[in-house]
Image 1 (spheres, rainbow over the protein chains, first blue to last red):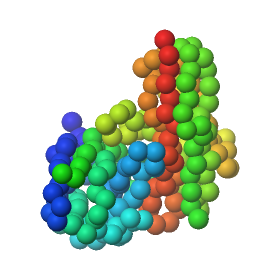
Image 2: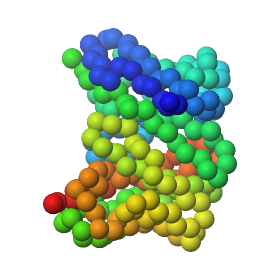
Image 3: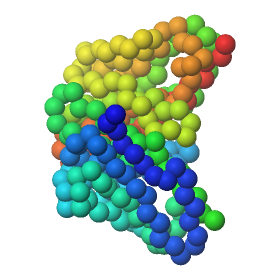
Image 4: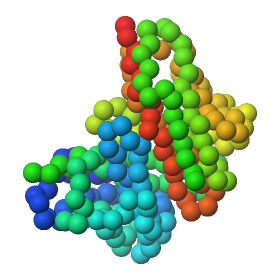
Length: 114
Length: 110
């Protein structure tokens, strides 16, 4: 079945450590997104990518980095510069065109600080 | 500024008690209004996309409608399994971004 796979489901970060969240999709979608979700807040955009080897900052990109070397993969690194990383991270993808567009989400990664 | 606002924040209904959730938007060149259902600890599940004022879409007990300023998610005769957080999002006409509301947490009591 086609879909978006995020791993790991739970991740713990020590102070000063960089951690990487994986996002893989087999939907052949061009555009991919990373969102952060905090309790009581809407989904906030971290980074998005419309094509391979290109990505744009979202509203809260500071302390995060991404790469898009393959169409299927869009990993997110939470760097030590992100001082409040505890949140639920969601990866999404879409074809980006057409009236039947759907934004599909993965199952999420819960990141906590030790 | 592009923005999506949902109300109410939380809603408790008795089983069978119909109601509506509201999503107000100010999104430049709106290219789609999306509704999602999210269960705790899971990713949002796609429900509907609406594109034009006057458009309606239905799925089981849910019906979404769209005007030029807001969208409604009508829930008819809800069941406890409809309990979840419902999110709406507006897609911009340029920039390929989606703006999400903070959601409405729905609880249906048996």
